Structures are given as structure tokens and as C-alpha cells.
Image (cartoon, rainbow, N blue to C red; front, side, top):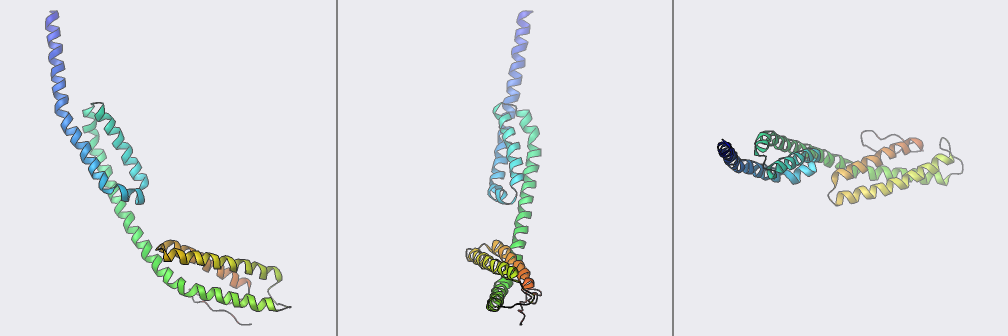
Length: 208
């Protein structure tokens, strides 16, 4: 009776080992396939969908741990979900790229306008500041406002230099953002100095 139980235990162990051996190959191939699929998009995902990439890599790590532990059932059961996650990640990357292309096109258009108009705005403000600085008596613009305008003008010049450098290095989006900041500050200074406001990026300085 004892021998029969022992034999049965051996048979059960043999069947289990055989079953595991049969599952090892498909489980291993499944993980390798997912790794290969993820490798195709990893670099772009790091740029356009970093959080999604982090989640997929976490799932993959758990699956690989199960594979190393010979938990092939868990690997095979978790494969479909991870495959879907990788597919979703690829969709997110495609969407991110399209959004980036649209944003770049918009930035190029904006920069083309700003690069023509903002230097004129800066020069007009400079002329206004110089004219007001020569006068001993000023109407509508007091000393504090003039000094504030001078400080703002220097910031505008510095920021515009950075915007131009960004454009020269191919960072058009950054250039457009800085250029827009300069324009916004310029509108404030124009108002402070009693100049006509810029209307839709057409800069017009007022004359005394």
C-alpha cells in the first residue's frame, strides 16, 4: 500500500513536470515577443508617453518574475493584458507625435510673426523711453513708471536674445514661448508709457 502511494506520487510529480515543461516554451516566447514589441516603441514612449511606459515596464517586470519562478500559468494568463497595454502605449505614442507635430507647426507660424514684429515693438519702446528721459517735465508718465519701463525693456531685450538663440538652435517651440512673453510684457510697457496698444501683432508706436 505504501509503495502504491509512493508510485502515485511519483506519477503525479512526473505529470506536473511534463505539464510545466510544455508551458515553459510558450510562456518564454510570449514574454520575449512582448519585450520585442516594447523595444520598438520604448524610446519614443519615453518622450511622448513616459507614464504609460512606466506602467507597461512594471507589468513586464512582474511577468518576468513569474517566468523565472516557473509560474508559467501566471505568465500565460497575464500575457493578453500586457499585450493590450503595449498596444495602448503605441497608440499613445502616435497621438503624442501628432500633437507634437501640430504644436511645432503652430509654433513656427507664431515665431515667424513674432520675429518680425517684436523687434519693432522693442525699438518703438526704446524710442519712447529715450524721448521721455530727455524731458524734465512729463505728462501721464511719472518717474517711477519710466524707471519700471526701463527695467522691463532690458528684460525684454535679454529674453528676446534667448528666444532668438532658441530659434537658431532649432527649439522653435521654446522660441515662440519666450517671444510671446516678450510681446506680452511689451504690451504692458506700451500702456504704461501711453503708447498705442499692439493690435493683433501689428506694432504701432504713438507720437507725442
